[in-house]
Image 1: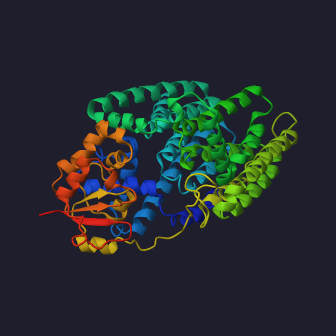
Image 2: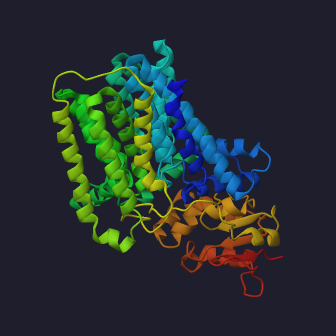
Image 3: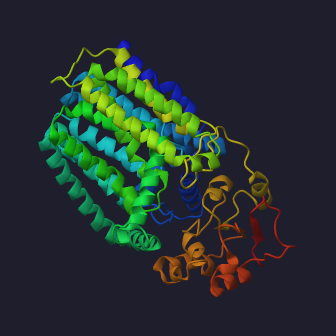
Length: 546
């Protein structure tokens, strides 16, 4: 019975995170899939700026939620989808434990698997269920699925499919597939090779099938890539990009202090063998390459980093008892520091980034040096697996991940969304009165960000429930030549079901839109002061003309 006690550490924090609302990007994806689905648009056809593999995953979670009565409120939708995701995480954590146990000592397997599971459950809210985070989740599954089965072929097939998913949910996260294969190779080179072969096979099959049956997926991908024409993948490396990357990495360390402990954990596991240090450097480079290539420096683009760091820290904590005290003290110290720092006013954070980042880097170096001397004797000082060791390691990761998930903490330290504060609970939405005025099942046309559809829930027959291409075309005239823009325009030229248009003037600049868009809106909807429906602040609701 005692061996199951460490897992109980996760239960209270799992319950706590159910009160964290899903971030706006996830609400955007879920809201778009729901609203378009009610309007007759399949998940295979709807555009929410996410690949089909991701849409199927989050759409499946939401579809399962709809099977339970009384889960239609905004609070219930958030909590149930979170709970379903947490259960998936737990199952993947079990798969990781079974895989590690086959090739590692029980202490490494148990602490490593539980630490990774904890990092996924207590992820920063802006990370949770983002495509980059789902790719990290698939990477964890790939390692467990490849190593757990007794039969090599089964491990290769299961691990290969999970590895393929790391890039299917978002092509930019392909480096996570390489990380998964390298981690498998650390424990079993033969399984890694066959897992990679299977992954290449699944990827090739997916490419052929999507090109044949879902060609718009590749049109959307090409147009999405063209939108970020200034990202590092479109030009040679330069000093400006490196500076932005460096600043973003400072934010990552403060937001997820477990990352600060990763170098020290590598020292414990490498055991003075240069090849393991070289491998650690390669994996570290891969773990940040996706965020660097995308060049937007959003914190969720670094979602794999804290998950990877937690797994490495957990393995080191379980591997050598000499390292546990410095690893534990260091982790708690930086976690407490992050909890205090993330709650400071933005102006203070912005003016002290240099000092704080240098302090965190110094801690990382000092801890790595300390662990070098603490474990300097050859071999590892091991002991029998005890439940309290695993519980302490799991609790340590939970403590390290909490600063970014507690109320009043910022989404970032100084970067994008740094002024957004985390809150718990589900306040009454401002659209309930609007829904009752226009009718809950009345078809509408959304010219808003997608999270409005998540809260309002009215159906739309437009396959672009949040019309990204029309919106971008308002201030980037070149977008009007994209194939996706022409397809998005059909929501105005061909859809005759919408009884209202909902416009967020801050997000969708009608005045900056093309003359064709302005003319179509004026012809189809009456936005005069007399005709407009009373709506929440920042929203215009115009009825269709008779």
